[in-house]
Length: 71
Image (cartoon, rainbow, N blue to C red; front, side):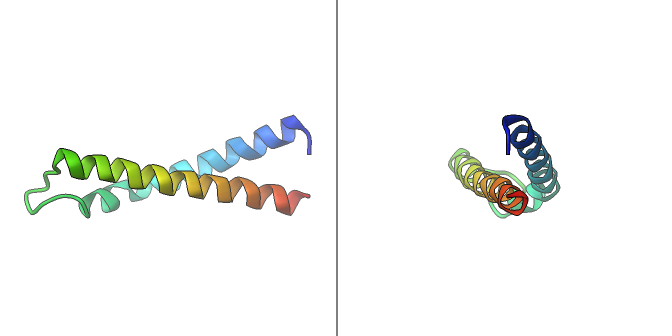
C-alpha cells in the first residue's frame, strides 16, 4: 500500500466514524445530563474525554481493518 492508498483509506475511515459519531452524540450526551437537560462543567469535560477516547479507538480500528483487508 502506498501513501496515496493509505490517505484514501484513512479519509474514508474518518468519514465513516464521524458520521456514526454525529448520529449518536445526543444519545451519549444525554447520559451526562440531569433531569433538566443541563450538564455540569465537570460532566461535560468527562463526556468530551470519553468521547475522544471512543472516537480514537474506532478510528484506529477502522483504519487498521481496511488496511489489513487490503493487504
